Image (tube, rainbow, N blue to C red):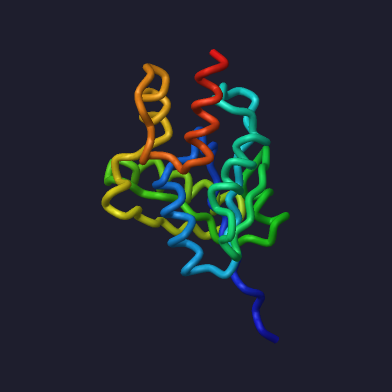
Length: 164
């Protein structure tokens, strides 16, 4: 009996999605036949855009990428992994400073479900400085985020700025 192909989950708030995220998803797809980008729906956070809009923007940004699915989830990540048939959890690691927190998460996820394995991917050098937090800060004070986020996200941020 052959084992089913390995499914990997790349979770996050993606608030907003940036080119570093896209880089990690595309690199993961070269390693795994199925990658699920899982947008966390957390009512305690105050995202720039609602979960369903972030899901739509990620889908638009990854349009035409076979083997990549985009959905949302709430609750425990390991529960979502079980339900979706995923065994691998993808995490981006930009710098050594990310390691301690990500390592603790990996160990806790494995404690909650011993089949969960975490794979850390580093982005291309050109994206190592990108974070959603920094992009939000730039955008909040009126800065230009062109070249940092995919075109669909840039357009959505522009629309959001015009509304405020």
